Image 1 (cartoon, helix red, strand yellow):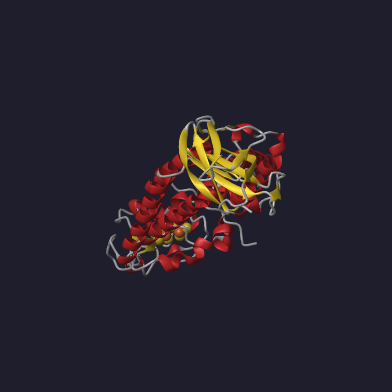
Image 2 (cartoon, helix red, strand yellow):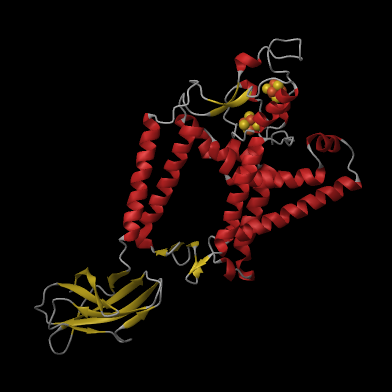
Length: 418
Ligand code: SF4
Ligand code: SF4
């Protein structure tokens, strides 16, 4: 375990910006699982039923490529944002940072800011300290449970969460509490894969948070040294990662900009220009259009276009046919018969009556013991057992013809029929 970090709170324009973004993103996270579209979840990854509810679309396993496009787009967007603005994702949008900050805010309200907490930690274990600690843990637990329920709501319909869902909720609650309450910066530092490779996405024009060495050094007391840095260590005290930005670009830095706010306040008090610690590029230029940003933007555009095209050209009724037994049966009248399981996939928002028939097989007979047509509920899959009886001399493949609500749907090749 590394030494505990008692980050000091700092106000400032970047803190306000981060708090606003955090409020918007957290509100979205908490509200989204409650939103319904046509009576079903707006966004849900239903693992047991192998479905992804995404806005007006319900995606089945046959459409996993949509999920792949979404993941690739998210990755490319992350690459693009990193190339342009360094670790802005870490500082302003990563749930790890946002929820850690929320948990730290509760800690600060109950146990006091950095100096008071450090003093208390060194002192004896008083009743007040125990009560404060208990209160903090209780509120953290409530936040963890709320977060646990919300995250579970992305995998189980949140309105259908019951006592039986407690293992899922308990799992996410435990993870949230452990992560945002206790581990915090250790997750970024030791386990986050993005922190490891983001350096490869940087170039000399990437925006990073850096200390102006030339202006700041030599550091020392006010009026006694020519450098602007008065070595007040405020930038270090506010850092949630416990690092000193004056040591240069570091893997641990999550670009939260707290050190900028802190140093700007010091410069304001000293009536010196702001920006001793600030956003800058290694090249000193601000160049947004660069070969790598063009490539990332182009890939993103291709992915978005592909997604839109596929989403607007989806086959709303699909069929997947599996022959139930490998062998055919000979009927007493000299014909042959095969059993099939026909999976009717209805991707529409309304029920559909599907009538099955055989294509190009005038002498063939389709027997559906449970009735034909079959009504398939909205956004669901219906398995239908059918028997196909036909003359032995017929062609060796069977194609099914589908009529949905009296409208013919393109048929699907089935495969050998004998
Ligand atoms: S060095 Fe500055 S920007 Fe980086 S994590 Fe620390 S406070 Fe945030
Ligand atoms: S806050 Fe600014 S002045 Fe103070 S130590 Fe950091 S860089 Fe130097």
